[in-house]
Length: 99
Image (cartoon, rainbow, N blue to C red; front, side, top):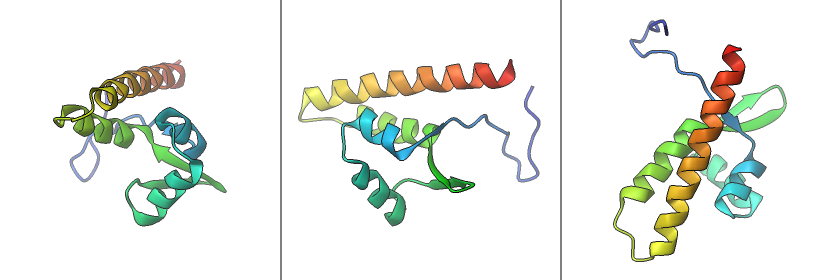
């Protein structure tokens, strides 16, 4: 059971992705992901000297794209596939942390 935080939100297990992983999933250049991090399009999480992206935030953004009417059906199906893959990764990482 998750305990409530002081600000009223429940604690959620984070699954973190490196910018290179996000770039590979989205089939983008890694520099694009770093630019999005600098611009604030994605939230940067720093642990030690490493940079990570919150996988849940990426899932949320992909879900918005998936629901949007798309002129390109290939883009929509790619967003669906990425969303499913990220959800599976999040489930696996949460299970490994609780073990």
